[in-house]
Structure formats: C-alpha cells, structure tokens
Length: 365
Image (tube, rainbow, N blue to C red; front, side, top):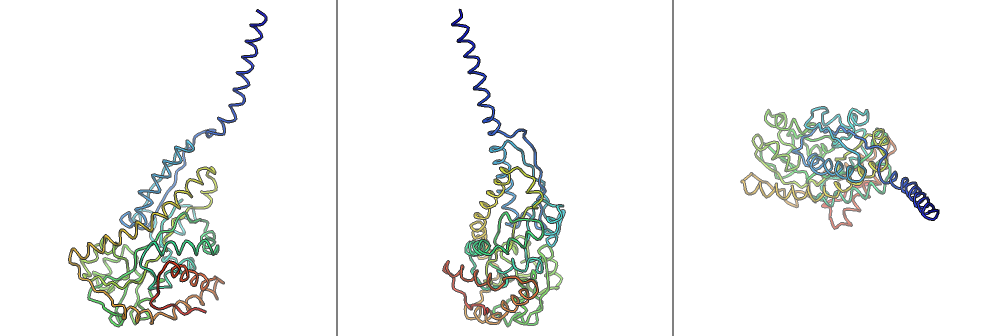
C-alpha cells in the first residue's frame, strides 16, 4: 500500500511539473488575448487603376489571412477609394495626420514634398518595361536612405512601390513628333510637365478624375498618361488618337502606412504587413507589364487610331529635354540639400545594367 501511495504521489507530482513546464510554451505559441486591428486604407483613385486594384485583391486579403493563421488576431480593412475620403492630392497628408492608416498615391502630386522621390519623372525616355523600372527604383531606394527619410518626415513608411505603365499620350488630333505639340495645351501630372513644355507646349496640371472633362471641353488638346487609364476612363470618346511616344515606365506610386499606427501593432503583425507589402511590390512589375501588353493589343484589335513616334523623332524629342534633369536637380539640391543628381545617376546606371539603352542620356554634373 505504501509503495502504491508513493507511485501515485510521484505520478501526481510529475503531472503538475509537466503542466508547469508546458504553460510557458503555450503562452509563447498563442497571443495572451486575440485582438482585432482595424485599418482605414484609402486612395483618391478607384480600383480600376491597377495600383489600387492590387492592394485590394492581394494585400488586403493576404494580410488578413496570414495574421489570423499565424497570430490568432483579426484584421479589418475599411476601404475608401475613388476619392471617397481623400483626393489624389491629399493622401500623403491624410496618412501623416492619421485620418488614413494606409494610403496609395502618386508622388507626382507632391512635387515639392516628394521632390527626391519623383526622380524617375525627371528622367523621361527611360525603360518602357515596368519590371525594369521597378527593380531599378527599388535598388536606388535601398542604396539611398534619404528616399525613405522623405516619407519619415511626414510620419509614414513605405510598404511597397508600384510602377506605372510607360507614359504615352492621348490626343484630340494626331501627334507624330515633338513639333506637333508646340503651342498646344498638354495635360500632365506636374513633375512631367516639362516633357511637353520643352517642346513648346503649354502644360496644364490635370489629375486623373479630371482628364475626360478636360479633353472634352478643350481645356487641353492632349494628355500625357499611360494606356490602361485611357481605356478605363474612356478618353478615346473625346480624344480618339493614341500617340505611342514611350516616355517610359515610372515607379512613383508608394503604398504607405502611418508610423504611429504601425508602432502600436504587435511585432508579429508588423512583420506580416511588411512581408506582404514586399510580395505585392514584386507582383506589381509583372502585373503592370501584363496590363500594358493586353491594353496595347486591344487598341490594335479595336482599330484605335495609333501614331507611333519614330525612333529618330523620339531621339530628337529627348534631345530637347537633355538639360532639364540637371536644372531640376540643381534647384532641389540648392533648396533642400537633396542628393538629386546622385539618385538620378544611380537610376540610369541600374537601368543600363538591366540592358536598357537610353536614346539620349541626361546631362548631369
């Protein structure tokens, strides 16, 4: 009997000891209490634009899924697109203030605040392949911390960079060379206005939602924009000519998150958001290229009036802009002490390393 009692006591002690040892492991494996985190994600553009569509179809569901599977927490996204809460020109400030947690916007609408980050816009006639533009831009960001610091100044961090398709033109009348835009009113996003201005055009700042009306009313004669948007916004209804200039694909659309909001998240949730953001960025180049190829093929099959600027005329147009990058860079270097020319040179070098040959290389110090 005494022996049986000793065995039972030892068994009970071993069981209690096992539970004590297992408890810390269970506490480590699961969150002390599952929480729900809500993010307002916004853009002045609609989901018909690919740089909003990809966050909506990949980033949002993937973050929710991984956070639930790996941490037990729940994530809710409140989507506010199509200018429902912010205009395209207001996203940077909305994320900075915390009115929006995650924002999607083009730095082209922040010519002063995001001058350094607009460097691809100051180097027209670069690679038309969005994948080349994206990879080169990412390498420059990783080399020059000043680029990310520009966002930090406004209380946010970049989760992903997204490229545009190659910029071209949609016009009310045909354009075959730089001389054809002389004296005409050309719509642009801001930093790229000099592409037409140096050719003698009269640049007019026009945001995406205003393109149709601006062309319809004659406020502008043509618009510098990429093909898929021409189709999505039905611009050919009011400007029937597609002009293939191939100004180049530009990676100037970041997806950012408010730093204060990010800092309040558990580390494991932060890691998942950053991880999915980078995966979305990697998809962005491929998706954008596929959209571009599909759109251009559709233009041809539908009989859209297409004028292709010849290589000699494209080179002549580029020659008109050869000094502009240096002049723009010097301006911002003097005003804000930004490494503008170093960043521009790095981008040119990265694109050349990827096999791209510039028709005319910008003159830089």
